[in-house]
Each structure stands twice: as structure tokens, then as C-alpha cells.
Length: 320
Image (cartoon, one colour):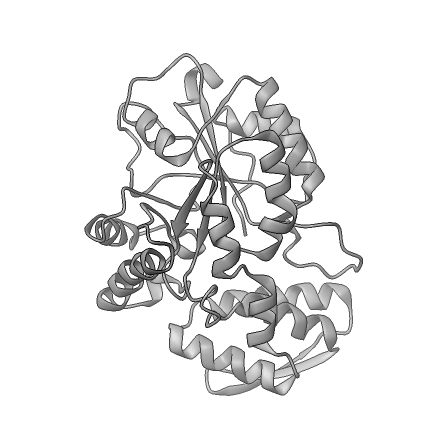
């Protein structure tokens, strides 16, 4: 299957790399892996004889005829603090290149990690209330399954809101249930000093993910264009170099993607990645501004399953 469907290579994406935590309610466990599992993945990639390359090299190979050896590119979304605390030591020990994508509002300490705040609210309470569509809604969440259902329902609803409405909704929820959104967001993500440590390493590629990490489909064209362009400009001012690669917030897919791809090109990016699962095709058959990635579900531990996915066979691993 790899010969017929494996393409030129694969871009793998991870989000959080952290130590195992106690507690049954962990609704974002699919986005997490442990440092030990990352170490196993890298070791296995070497045994599978993939070329582990940086994103510039991956984009170059995507424009060329298929080579005998396929490539794999490691990317990390979210800019979480645990990337430098837990993932970077593993990556450094293996001396492999990787890319980190980060929305510039977070190292500026202005970003709102609303998905983490929502998790804390649901975890701490057995009953919550909030305004949805101008109506007060009440959720009894005393049981584990109730908490899971409420979290995923509210997360999906919040992602449909325009950016200002989403910010108001999560701030109202945090105020009601005593969650410090600003402190939580600061503690979870890297600052510019952390990022400077990474970008000083020639094996690290820094990529942008807009300013505020909004759902671009919920923005008008002018706002989406500004988010994409300003994310690059702020990072360039902070790091004295312009990021050349973009990750669409929450992956971006569907009918809005061609418009956003055009905005990424106009802003000066040389590539943009999505959350669409798939392999990168050779001979320029993969759009540089709509590159697919394989997102690993952290609830799985099977490296055999990863090997099959990297051969071009999707196993339902697209992130929820």
C-alpha cells in the first residue's frame, strides 16, 4: 500500500507532550502524548527508514518526483509550555528537525486558551449554567459521562461563534465559576524567551498560527487576512526573522480553505498546513497552502497503527 498510496512523505502533527496525569475526566487526551511515546515514535521512524526532515525540505520534496525514501516531518501545534519542558529534550537527544506553530498572542500574554478554561470549569463542578443563543442553559454534570458530553457539546458550540462572541462567552463562564483565564493561558504556553531558545537551534523551524488563533471560517475576509498577516509580522518583530510557514487555527478545511490559502500566499508564507488527514504527494500534486497532516490520537499506543497510517491508509485518526 505504501508503494501505491504512500506519496512522497508525511507531515505528522502533535499537540501536547506531557507526563501522564491522574483523573478520569481528561476530554483532550486525544491531543496528548507522553515524552516516552514521542521517544518511541522517533526511534521507530528511524527503523522504518524514513528521512526525518524539516518543513523546508518537506515542501521541496513535495515539488519533486517521488524519491526512493519517503520523508516524515514532525510538527507541534499550540506552543504549549510542555513542548520545551518535555518534548524538546527528547527531540534534542535524537537530533531531529521539527516545526512548532504558535499564535503570537500567547507569548505576548494576550491569548485566551478557552478550550483549557472550559475543561477546568466542567471538571470542577457538578452543575453549570450559561447563556446559549440568548437563553440560559443548565447542565447537570455530576457523572463522568455527563462531563464528557457537556464538554464536547460546549466546545463545538463555542467554535461556531465569531471571535468577539466566543471571548465574551468564555469570560462569562470563567467569571461565574472562578477560573482565571489569563493565568491559565499564561501557564500553559511558551513565552518569547522559551521560543528564542527553540529558534536558536538550527533544527527548529518556527511557524505562525495567526495572532489570536480564531476559527478563520467565523471571520470576514478582512479579519481573516489581518489575522494571517499580523501573525507573521508580530513573530518577525519579536524574533528578527519572518516565519515562512503557517498552520491554520483548528486546522481549517472545507469551502473557506481556498480563500485562506490565497491569503497565506499574499502574506508571504511559503506553505500552510491543515488538519485534513493524508500524505503529501510528489510532483507538486499537494497544494503548498493546503498540506495534509496526520494527527496522532494520544489515546492510542499502537505504533503498528501509525505505520499503517503513514502508508496512506487512514484509520479514523483525524482529531475530533
